[in-house]
Image 1: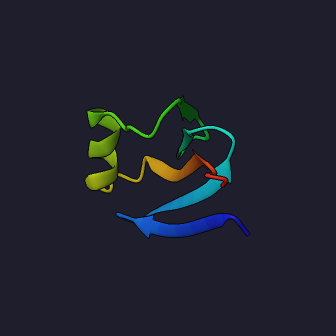
Image 2 (image 1 turned 60 degrees about the vertical axis):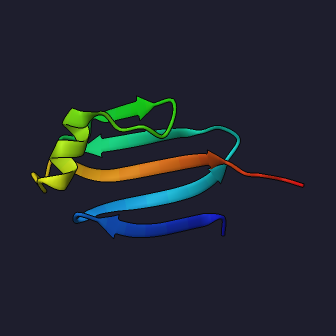
Length: 67
């Protein structure tokens, strides 16, 4: 509940409701990069679009809008 999952360029992406906007990108060696917003840089984008296999998971947290 509160999550959405799909793949993009063979990379699993999981969206989760949270109290902050951030992303965690996990590489094949287990290294994780924390991004404090929802913008991926050119180098990381190229790895994803070129399907290099270096990026194995993207976890996106977004602030849940509550009325």
